[in-house]
Structure formats: structure tokens, C-alpha cells
Length: 160
Length: 392
Image (spheres, chains in turn cyan, blue):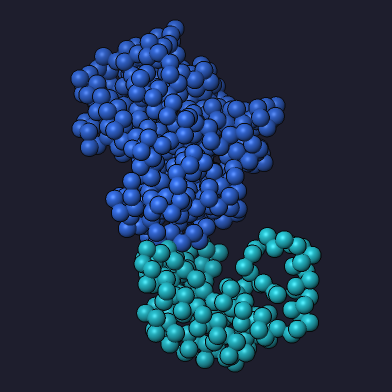
């Protein structure tokens, strides 16, 4: 099963073109289970082959049909590349496999010189470890100012 | 109750909440799921309801009255069925109805739902009114009791008891009499069609109603039924087959459409107005009939028929389906679906909002008053418009 980005029957943002069954509906239901998570990244365009090949390897390692998507940003200074991992909410084993795939993909993004787009908590930790100390301090002060009791989105972007 | 024994246990986890269920066909906004439009909370969208239902059946959350209200706020309008891109879309409203059935079985429903079901069981209508009053809408019209005329005119609870809907029920009777249609009514012998009982999940009561209705129709040798309400049309057309249905059923716009095409109704008096038509869910999305009402309106001299941005399978429900006409979990706000819908009609430039459903008629008529649009927009049933065109 390959990446079908702009086929006749669907495609990324297929709804905008009036398609009845956008590709997202097929991808999300590969595991017949209503579970669907992805890692997005901002990535140098030259990394496209590695993104594709390694994404396929991660998917196969965890028994997940691979679906990747890549598109240039703006005039082509970088690209948005994403890896999608469906799972079955009624099958805990598939959830474990999808979570492992997501974490390995977070690692991959940083190894290839990209930045994770809207990361989950695992990806947040990876990014926080690499942040400039001054940026970390700025984030800490903003969070302290806006949420002195830590009640806004607790557990996310926690900076000590 | 348990997830394992739930009829849709193998399907309900497959919704991944993409959110498409909230859109109209033309993707213009996210407000075409009536409860979501009213509350703007994910839990009130189809996807949210399915996830909550699964969590409840899986003992991950406890039943609360609020949870029940979220489930019962669904008007079963089927916008989600039209928009869901997944292949189990045909069953997503059925899942909500089945979950309501689990709540009914457990005796855990909101008080308004309990009253509705008790009234139907005790009195044969959700109003709790006496059966002897059921035929009073026809007093003075000359409409006959059914005695093997060609058609049985089945009026339904709203047309029988609601004063605004009664006006439209009478208008249709007058139009049919003027066109020479052979028909009669059951009067006090008529009882609830059960469509909303079915949608509310009380399958035992629905079976009893369907069985009794069909027995009555068979005893009277009824061959053809004209329903005033699309809700009754849906129940008789789609839910009664397994109980021995032995008659043809038509919504009244089917009949009027045929009469207009055959030149059997004279609307030469005309009706001069900019009219827009609000598709009722149980005629449109449930039964795929969008053209008959428009054909009737187009046949009347003087009518300029215009469309709202959301029309046909993309129409916004008035908020009265799935029992909400009575249990009213969506009212009380300018975000209520009926108030949104009359604003859409006004913005389209209409001065008449035409309907073909007694529940839509009352819901939207009330909404016009709430929106203080009474001097700009009137809600009329198609039967009333045809009657005007016929000079009745």
C-alpha cells in the first residue's frame, strides 16, 4: 500500500475539491479503528528521499500501512513532510505500535535537521533539550505570567 | 449494558472525529450539525457523541443526565451521514439511536424524554391530549371519516393538536377536496406514527404503535396513505415493512406535484412572493425527495423560488427532529437551529419561508418571532401556499 496523495478518488485536502471520500478517510481507517495520529515536520527539501524511505521502514517495523505526504512551503525554502500512523482504538496492541512509530518519527525529524510541527509531549521533550537556554527562559517567563498556577494546558511545554 | 453486547460494537470505535459531520455539503461553515451549532462543543457533534457513547458503554464514564441530554440533543437529521467520509457512514445515526435504546432499557433518560414516551403510550400522542380531540382540527371542513375512499389522509400528532399546524392540515384538506381527491381521515381513531418514538430508542413502544396502526389500516382495507408529515411518511415507508405493511404511502407533496403536473389544481389566483424552501430532513436526507416540493411551488403563478445557501441535502435542520420538537434540548438561544435557519432565509432575500413539515412549520414560525423578523418573513406550509393560489 503506497502513498496516494492526489488520486482520482481522494487526496490531501480532497474535501476542498468536492471529493466524496478524501484520502484522509481511507488512511484514517486502515486499521478499522478510528485512531489516527501523525507527525508533521518542517524539513529541508533535500531530505525528501530519506523522509520517504525511513518513514516506510518505521511503518513496516510496526505493522502499519505507510502514508506520507510532502509539499513545498512558500517559494520552496523548505517543505512540510508528515507521516501518518492509523491504529485501532479497540486494539491496545496497535495503539502501542503507533505510539512507538510516532516517537521514532519524532527522533527522525530531528536527526534529519527538521523541526517537529505541533509536537506531542515526547517531541516537546526532544525540542526542549535542544532549545537555546535564553529561549527556554523566555518560555518559562511567559508561562509563569499567563498561567501562574500552571492550569493552562498542563503537561505541555513544561519548562522548569 | 456493555460495549460487547452493543449492536454496533464492531463499528463505533471507527469514528476518528475528523469533524466533517459538522459541515454542510458546500463546506461553508461548521454549523450544519444542529446540536453542535447550538452549543459549539465537540461533545455535541456526531463524532463527540459516538466517542462518549463508546466510553459509556465501555464503563470509562458514568451515565449522567447531561450525558443523556447530549445523546438526545441529536435531531437525527442525517447531515452527518451525508458528510461522513467513512464507509460506515450509513450507520452513524443508527448508532446514536441504538445508544438511546440502551438508555431506555436501563431506564436512564432525561425527564422530557420520559414524559414524551409516557404520553405516547397512554394517550397516543406526545402532547398528553385526549384521543377524542384528535380529529377536531377538521370540524367544519366537511372532511369525511375514512370509509374506503381512495386515500387515507394521515395527519399525525402535530397536525392534529398544534394550533399552527392545524391551519396547514386544514389547508391541505381543502386543496384535496377542491381537486376532487377521494380521501378520508381516521379522526379520533388515528394514533401516533411512532417515528420519534423510534428515534428516541423506545423500540418496544414503536413495535406496538406500528403493529396497531397497520392492524387498523388493514381492517379498514386502506390501500393508499397520504401523510401530512414527512416523519409519518418515513415511519410508514421505512420502518413498518416488517410489521406487515400492505399499503402505498405518499407524502402530500407527491400528491400535489402529480396534481399540478396533470393540471388538476387551479392555482390561477397566484401567489406573488419571493419564496425559499426549507427541506425537511425526513423528506430530503431520509427519503431523497428534494424536487416534488419545488415542483409544486414552481407551478404556482407569481412565485419567485430562490434557494438558501444551504439547500437540499445540505439544508440545516430546524432542530425539531428526533423528538426535539417536544423535548426541546436545542432551544433558548440565538444559536438554536431554527433561529439560524430563519436568518438564512431572510439573508437569502425571501419573504416567504416555505415548509413541507408540520414540525418545521411550528419550529420556524416560533423562530421568526424570536428573531423579530415578523414584518419581513413569514413561514407557510406548501399546502397553505397552494390553497392561496387556488383562491381558498
